[in-house]
Amino acid sequence: CSRKKPPVARPTPPPPSATTNTGGAPPPPPAPLREPEPVSSVPAEPAISGTAVDYNARSLDELNRESPLQPVYYALDSADVAADMQGTLTKNSEVLRQYPSWVVTVEGHCDERGTAEYNLALGERRAQAARAYLISLGIPAERIKIVSYGKEFPFDPGTTEEAYAKNRRAHFVVTSK
Amino acid sequence: APQGRQAPASQQPAPAQPPTTPPPGQPPPQQPDQIGVSITLSGGAAPRVAVPNFIAASPDLKAAADTIGEVLWDDLRFEREYDLIPRASYAPITPATSMETVPFDQWKELGANAVLIGTVRQNASSLTVQARLFDVATQRSVWAKEYTASANNPRGFAHTISDELHKEQRSLVGVARTKLAFASDRDGEQARGTVEQRSIKEIYIADYDGDAQRRVTVNRSLAINPSWSSDGRAIAYTSYRRGYPDIYVSYIYQGKMDQPAGGTETIHNFLPAFSPDGSRIAFMTNRDGNMEIYSVSRDGSNLRRVTSHPGNDSTPTWSPAGNQIAFTSDRSGSPQIYIADADGMGQPRRITNESWADRATWSPAPYNEIAYAGRNGPGFDIKIFSLEQGQIRTVTDSNGSNESPSWAPNGRHLAFASTRAGRTQIFTIARDGNDLHQVTKAGNNVQPSWSR
Image (cartoon, rainbow over all chains, first blue to last red):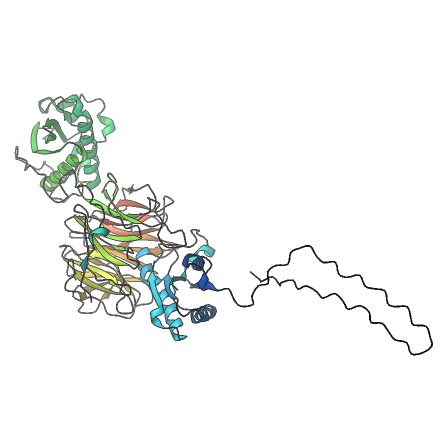
């Protein structure tokens, strides 16, 4: 969600300066006093510190419910990390660098249109592909575990193309922080 | 690799109560005495047989006598060795009150060559059932057997009579006492420790006809891919109970459990398949960086590698002789079925050419067929590859997606999972595509394994 800009109390404008008149002409009438800005009655929000949310303060469940680690999606019957997904993994690697104590499990998942048995192998390949990419970005291997669930745990039970696309993924779970 | 170990007692499932009928594959406790001589009926064509309700020696045994008659009719109808006269046409026949008052003339009029009937009498806390096959023309008993077993499972008598009649009269190994194992989420249990709602599957068993369905594992986590041992007393399956997938062997009548494939947090094992003699288990593992097939003896000793290829090799099954393994490999770019020697020597031979083929199951002689799930459009159909002729035929009708075939031990029927009824259910079908029968109705039920 976009962060709301904190309201800043606006300083009241300075009073018009008195003009000293050296000539003989009478001083021009002073500019009319500007009415001060009406102050809104909304209580000012507490100032938010400028740094990012401290994820370490959250429980594992809260962390995984709204995870800073985004899933990687795959094409049908494929375990290749597509170009746009490499961007996701790069962002994930930055989060992992920022929280060096975290250990994650990358779960491999498939959509229902393959067979249950072979999908266990395809799910493993998807998890391995995401893990290998993170290791290539410098994340230590022992911080990334993998597990394949084949098509046993769909994220979307629907039978539309859109549901299937959501289910073909490598899903990140923070297991310790 | 680390040795297989026995799972600690605390994690073992509550022992399933022992079977009421004799465990499959073993003769009933009391060895029946052979009465009369068994002569196969004359003529090659399948004899037309009537199977009325059995005769209850006392009124309180009528329910059992009726059940035995009904279930025996269904068991015989399933194997299609006999031409069974429909029970609906028995109404006008006067019910016999003893073996001596069977109305042979009325049965003859109905077109029966033979009548299979019996008596049920109390024997202390058990029942004693005598069954006879009468030749209607000569009015003589051509086959007779007597059984004594516990009173609370009349179906067990019918199944035993059906199997023994088939064996002795038609030299056929019947499946009336076999069971199906499968994974089901019918209990609605959710996975622990995950933020997502994940309904988990546990392992269930049922009689081949769908009766007596009950759960046999207490994993409280995902359990899939069951495979029966040849003696029907143990089931191997994949479980995630320790947070990673490994193979467990549950001895369902003793509540004992083994973990023979030596899985760890990084070594994952899936898809166990018992060898025909029950001594070894083939399985898929990630220990070499990509999925390979290994086999191990059931106590976890002498691990052997079967495949070595950078492609994924998965879903192993044994040949009936136990010297070969059929499996799925994507080495050609898409999952296909291959056959390899069980000792890992030689080049695997590819036998399918589908867009996606998986879960081979190998039937014994005289059929020698490999059934598998082949992709047909969006879903899958069950297809059969004949090893002799090398042809492939389809037995399901593209109604829903039909996957995970498993042969009956005599190769006459297949169990499989299908989405044709909405949620995924287990069905059985004859190898010629007839006699579709729905086995499960509750929850989603997948990956059936047919016992011996």
